[in-house]
Length: 91
Image (cartoon, rainbow, N blue to C red):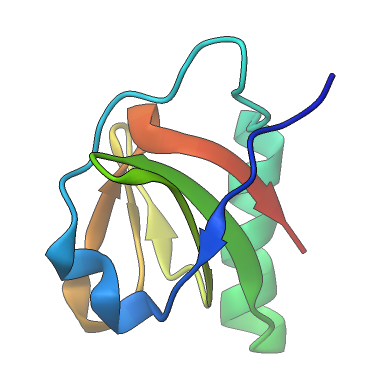
């Protein structure tokens, strides 16, 4: 499957975008990937590339994942990303 090209942006720029639901045929994120990204961030201080669907197309950030809840992924500075907006996480 050919994935959409995502523009790499600084994580601090995320506040400039509105999150939209990711296209169902593009979603590459499973619960196990989310939990592994949290473990990498907390135990190994390792970063992940997160692709998110926004009102200006797919965007990709490199960041540490702090926590995952039922509906959100949290990164630095308390920024919450809706899980339904996630396209992919790579680490």
